[in-house]
Length: 480
Image 1 (tube, one colour):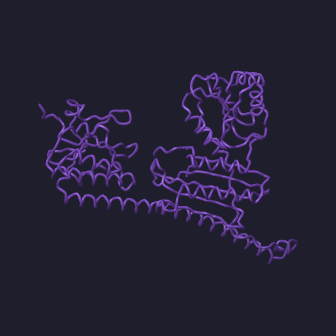
Image 2 (cartoon, rainbow, N blue to C red):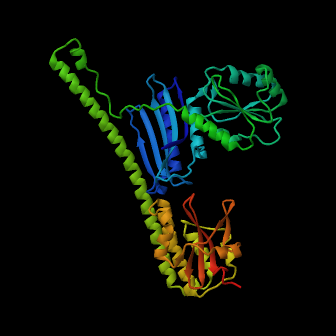
Image 3 (cartoon, helix red, strand yellow):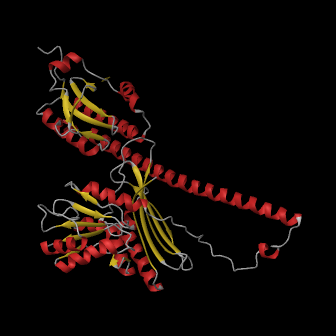
């Protein structure tokens, strides 16, 4: 499990109305982001909420929109040990397969979650060294503004968040951290603009050296850590660094049991504190054993809950795949009764491109095809082979089929050749080469369908099947 985003803040002065407002905002966010009528069996939502429970907690487990993993969003509102009100939001990534593939280490929250964080910060009047945590940019326009910003950055010893400073007046291009990113970084970092030369001068005069400039972006960490002078023009590595630092600083959440604590009574320890009898020693030993067993049971329970969560996610994914395959089969059976649907190859391939989501069709497939046409029976067989290949691609991505046996698997189901001759590739490289992810790759593996061919490329890095050619037999050593 990888934490990709987190923000946490607390206030010591609060009232029940404030907490109720925060809880209401979280529930509104939940209803708007995941409406009841749009929730699928792939989304799991758990809410812990009771009038006598010091903890309010919402957890949403859903498929990640970009990678094959489950994304968990957990929002917690609790009363701390010193009666402080704590708001905490975290996002984690839970891989659904044991595949060693690149996954995002961090990600900024979407607009809805950012709006929730900034709204809650305003309600709680949360601050960091007296600066509000509302996700808005701090603008310094005058000499005094620049000096005040320098004082906050350099002398506010209670500051716990980094400050990102940009000299917008002397910068050649737009600011690196814009308004949208500044809002998403609420609770992670402060963002400040020195908008005029006077503000820059006021900052430098207070600091005594050139810490800020229009040629770089400055990050001043809290408690005297060496500042970062960021010279690159790409904001993403800087944002990633800030989020990683925030995630690493997240405090552990110690959640009390939702069950109400029993009324205080005089404990056994108090009654027999001075006793040294063997019977008492034996009872103490048994008590310690029971405590150890209870702790082990709690750990087993947490493990079972985690396994149940992942099982539910896998089951929902399997059900979704089954429904998709059923719809594909239904469409194919309906199309078989409409001969006119198979007259045009371009129309057949275009339908496959929109239907078979587990395959990636190279952008040049239709251009390569040109005006090529076969008979309707061949067109239908091309579609049927693409349907079967799409199902294989889905199993490949789930891990049901190992990448190294893909060719063997295809040879059992198609009239399939895993490669073409080196002579053909050397003689006609333009026929067997496509541009994929900024590099030239070979589309040697192919399915034979009469005079038609489907050439493909297996991207091992992403476990993706890329369709590179659908059409006539490509030129080879027999071509004059």
